[in-house]
Image (tube, rainbow, N blue to C red; front, top):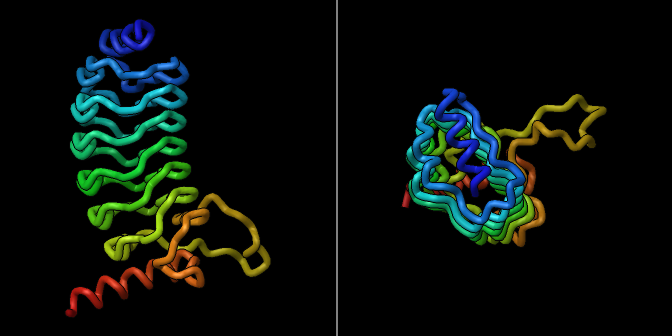
Length: 207
């Protein structure tokens, strides 16, 4: 913890806009992190964190936040205060759900939550109008919420005919290795999944 505090104090002193607390074996994050209101890039990767402090919500200048390879079981509601956040990495944790407040991240373009224990997604995920990449592989999802159909910037990449077999990082939606029953197994391509969810959403709206 002392190393983390020293790094926080150094950023405050120097006026830096980046902070890395990676690989410090942290089990908690100092509350003083909330003082870093001008930091735009924060990395908490590869620690032993089971939770994040509410003070994280005071870091309102954050553009990129990474807390992958921890033991996170939940996210604080205050994460919704990060109105400038564009990129959020939360892979390889123990998250079982995401807070509804995630839908308040209006500028978010990239959300990585692969390799968690998610059993559901909040309907509010459909409010992320700028989201273009959503990584959900290797979780415990059985259903995708119809509200995801509102994420119009998520599309299948376009490959030349002779390159369609290539696994490409441009793929914007990953849902494999989930026990999904809705959408059904025959619907897995990104465009098909999004069309299916939009149709469900429209059907519900017309009732």
